[in-house]
Image 1: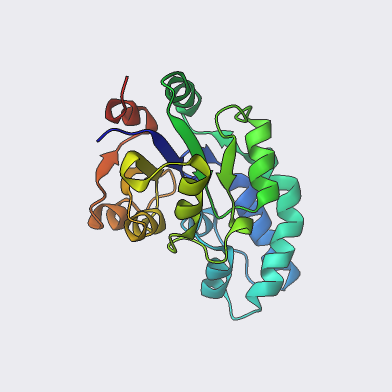
Image 2: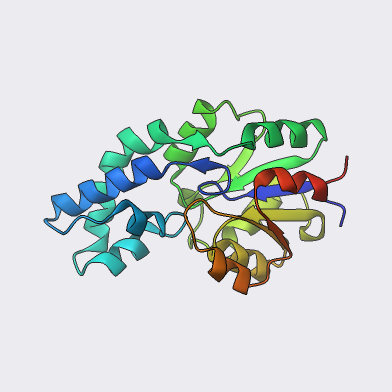
Amino acid sequence: MAVHALIFDLDGTLIDSSEGVVDATNYALRQMRETERSAEEIKRYIGFPLKQMFADFTSASADALYDHFQVRAAETVVASAHPLDGVDAVLSEVHKRGIRMSIATTKTRGHLDGIIAKLGWTKYFPTSVSGSDVAAPKPDPEAFTLALQQLNCNAASALVVGDTINDILAARRVPVKVAAVRSPYGGHEDVAALQPDYSLNNLRELLRLLPV
């Protein structure tokens, strides 16, 4: 396929912000006098809606937990975010090839903009879609549909790159082709079972799918 635009998921695809997410999650649980969770338990939910995670962890109010999370996350999530191995080089090469790029994530607009600015990625991502910009999170296709509109690109010329089952499901519902990159947070078997169009061990392998 001729790829003219890429839509990336953020956490687990381009960055690792798990340290901040784990910290903010356990902060929220402590505020509600709930049992803290291990890093491994929390990482499995990264890339999924926060309220879903809290609902699975406890019967306490997911809305209240979400609010406590955001208070702490303002200090920790952007600060802890760093690119996954090889990502900076891949983004630079894609940019050189003239392929348009966007991000579609469940993270809030404030966190997303803070991460893009911190990592020096503004030139790569003049447009992006955050969880604050849509009515329904992935696996609803709204985030990817909005990203395509912002990129002024039709689905047949675009490729989604993500690491979770929600990325695969949302892409299928657009529909747009999707490449699944191996996540640092696990869940590989669940993603593989959905048979994405392409499977990548790391983001560097994306370059072989793109026009030179």
